[in-house]
Image (cartoon, rainbow, N blue to C red; front, side, top):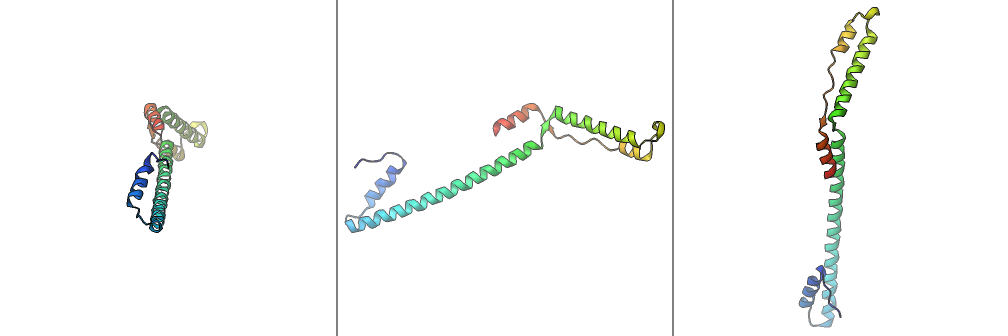
Length: 130
């Protein structure tokens, strides 16, 4: 019989060394070794499944965090768009001939949204790390 090489070789050698001399008991011994090996394999399968689930959660979390972050130029464009919308809304509610009203003044007082941005290099680094 050809000897195996690799990770299972050590387990096979240990099982052979621990095997009793009686052929009847040898069968029992090897069956118990096989049952233990199946138990270990199943434990490894469960651990692999847990690790894959954990990795998927981490990827989803990373994708979510990246979705909250935009480049500085995109954040500045959004701020300019918000300011233009605010200006246009205030202009619409003004009286005839452009006389400001309380509502138009309130609209003008609305602050710009705070940008959540990172530099393009940071964004590229985060995407590359995935």
